[in-house]
Amino acid sequence: MNALESDLKRLPEPALPEGLTAGITARIAHLDEERAANASKPPRVAGAEASRDRLAWAVALVGMTVALGAQVYMLVVGEATLDLTSLRISGGMGGVVEMLPASSAVAVLAAGLLLYLAGLFAPPRGTGPGR
Amino acid sequence: MNLADLGDLDEAERSRPDPDEGPETTAVRAAVRAVRGGDREAFGRLLELYQRRLFGLTLMMVRDPEGAEEVTQDAFVRAFVRLELYDEYRPFYPWLATIAVRLAQNWLRRHSRVSRREGAPIDPERDPALTIDPVDKLITDERGRRLWRSVAALPSGERTAVALYYRQGMKVSDVAHALGVTSGTVKTLLFRARRKLRGALDAAAGPAGHREEPT
Picture 1 (cartoon, one colour):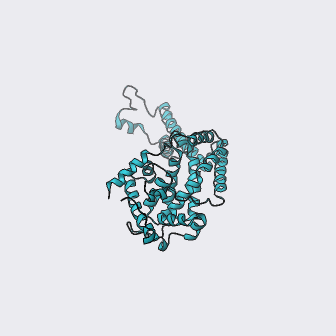
Picture 2 (cartoon, rainbow over the protein chains, first blue to last red):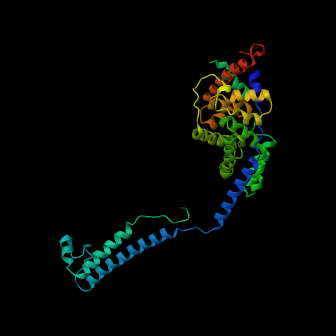
Picture 3 (cartoon, one colour):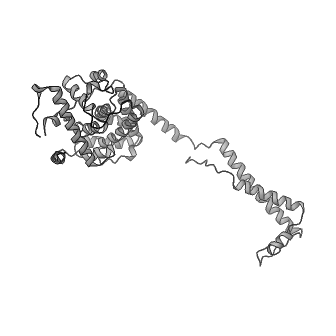
């Protein structure tokens, strides 16, 4: 090894500035306390987001119920027939169109379907502990 | 470029003590396990062992004492937070130094005021990035200060490689990992740094103080 390399190995280490050690120790202590505090809390669910999620689910459920209920009503009162062998109600698209008389039940069915679709395609928001 | 110079690095590295053995390694491993077990105070042991060395590295890189203090703090805090990722069967300091080098590079990008043309001769007296007075307070030996300023006047990659390889005793492969370059690039950086330093120190010493060195 030559003289330059020897000198480079002995390059002086500067003195530590005052407060460096204390600064590091304080930051680590603060971090540690934050971690401990977060670990002891139950997972926090954002209130507004949870409400929106619940509303979306409620709308979907109500819509589905209304739509199914309207269909069942029409079957019960004889305004529609169910043919299980052909997996169609009153056979074919034409039959389906005929099956839907202009009545309040149809309007309810349509409204229920719309609500169901609105709830189903509401923007998702994650609210679980992983967030 | 003299290939023999590059080969000399391999020879020098083979003769270095293995950093994976020794009482320091045992102490580090014990401290790391204690911290992972929840004993935050044990991290103080790692601070004691490495903070001065790390501060020297960051000061050489950023060339600003306040910046070096900030980067050193950030490096230790990040090491504490990411201690789970450290493989305790590998040397601790290269892992810590890698964190510090990346943080120092970010600091330099944010605070860059002077761009140095690669290959320009060293002129520590005229480099505005070298705040002489604060460094003078931290290094009291005149000869040491002169050498420090010469190394600090090198471009960032070269001075970091010099600090990590020579002063801090890291292997070429560990220096390469810290800098994010290949081992070949590290050897090239060291070669260039030595060439510039020889010229600068010989010029500073003057004809009477010329040092004889093997070519």
